[in-house]
Amino acid sequence: MHKPTYEFLFGAFAFVIGAAVGSFLNVCIYRWPVDLSINRPRRSFCPNCKQPIPWQQNLPLISWIVLRGRCANCGAKISFRYFAVELVTALLFLAIWESFPWQVAIAYWVFVSFLIIGTFIDFEHFIIPDRVTIGGVIAGVAFSVAVPALMGTDSRLAAGVRSFLAAALGYVILWIVLEAGKIAFGRKRIRFEAPTPFTWAKRDDDADFVVGTEESLWSDYFAREKDRLLLICEEVRIDHQTYGNVTLDFRYDRVTAEGHVTMLDDVTHISGVARELVIPREAMGRGDLKFLAAIGAFLGWRAVLFSLFAGSLLGSIVGLITLVVGMDLIWRLAQLPGCFLARFSCGGTERCLVRNRLLPTLIRIPTPAHRLLYSCWLFENARVGVCAD
Ligand SMILES: [Zn+2]
Image (cartoon, rainbow, N blue to C red):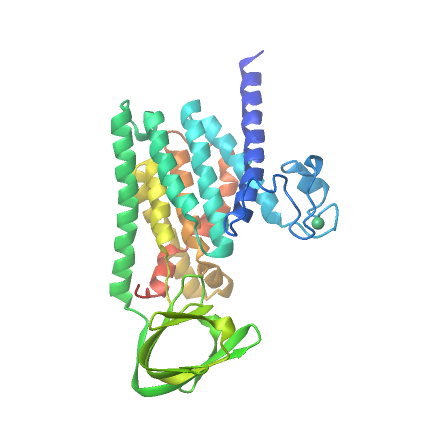
């Protein structure tokens, strides 16, 4: 066979593997955050009718197009995400295959798989499971030992050490940014001039939260699961329980008072007098720190800096444009916490692809979409202070 034919076949093979892996990543994205096993049920099922999907309707990319994004059994819409994940994975696998020697390419395949899972889970759930972040760090160090070229050396020991140090750098540098953010923007702590009465009253799935004359919906305060709202009170009544001088520590669905946790589902009315309110403004979670660590473990310390600075530069540009033009849509997009993650992923992906050679033409296709996603970071940092732990 001619050499070009060979190369074409290998490329096509990488693309097909990518699509198949993308199909598996979809399963992880769907099941990991809700703690479903990825082995059981073994076969994919329709999220709507729970009907197992036969293999011929589960071909990566093809099935989604043939069935026009609908379940063959119940006709429910199947999210475009499934198709997008398979396509992005396939394109990235191909681009990586074209750019690197095969050992390195395989390591990078694993790397972008972690990035894709993390990014899509964060978009939907505002969390990054440890399986992605810590798993990514472990995989990154292991691959660096197995393929020292990842860290630009011949020595396995040196590669392992470099990989580990780069992971630590990723974690620490972002931790510093986070702490600096707290100092620069202050905690969103509101001290009332005089003790102020408040009430919390359940209404349907939500609750009315009234402090002094300020009325708001409970759900407005919480963007993500780990958000906390603190209310420092002189006195409090939770249904029939009363407390004096207590700090109420709220999550979206529960409240802790003097070490005692009550689910808000079981509460109908909370009232009292407050001195101070601390609003949840956690822009970045610990997951982001660990995530940047994973990028470092696979790509080295330069990639950590690259991801951080490329993200912040683009983020500031978009932030400025938004402020000047006042585009509501971009503003909202910029507020998606998922952007944090996406920007690192893209920083990481680009770094991984740019590293030795020019980007193949192919990769230019997903890149603009990537950029848009991750271009928000400084902006979001600047937008909010960070609530104290
Ligand atoms: Zn169905």
